Amino acid sequence: MKKENIKVLISEEEVDRKIREMGEKISREYAGREIHMICVLKGGVFFMTELAKRISVPVSMDFMAVSSYEGTQSTSKVKIIKDLDESVEGKDVLVVEDIVDTGRTLSVLLDMFRQRGASSVKLCTLLDKPDGRVTDIQVDHACFKVPDKFVVGYGLDYNQKYRNLPYIGVIEFEEV
Ligand code: IMP
Ligand code: MG
Image (cartoon, rainbow, N blue to C red):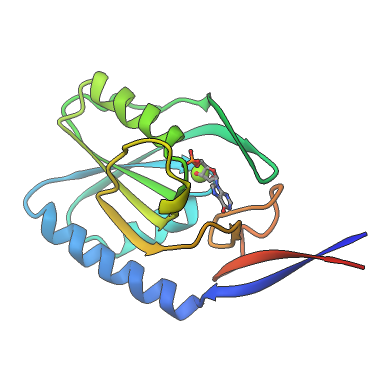
């Protein structure tokens, strides 16, 4: 049998501090404007709510659910499970993600929001895994770069578990 061990990669304090800084940075960038934040469920939700609390310009929010992963294996298909409730037309969209790995999911979504008439579309991710990239997607804001390992916590899951960890951890499998 395999036992799952979680090793802390980024502590709760570090994550909180970085999100606070990111909120201030984004508030300066969007000064005088409004931000329409779009969260990619479910992973992005923990980051989105914390980030939104640290942004001082007016914010509206919408949610979208897509899937591209089964277990730890990336698949090339992006399936829309839940579409947005509101139109993005004429809005300054900020897509909020948990992690950009291959970038496949996001490249599809960012193009879609542009086609639907958003004024601007930018991407803010909690984690950036640059070694996994297979697309030329532009990551406008990333809180942390992480190595090419499977990470969990702060919204990120392994088979739907560990999203609620208040830190970012690396999952290791031990034979028991
Ligand atoms: P993509 O490969 O950039 O399209 O990433 C798609 C999604 O896969 C991310 O939004 C995450 O939900 C998930 N994902 C990618 N890497 C990890 C990881 O290390 N841990 C947990 N989920 C991941
Ligand atoms: Mg995700």
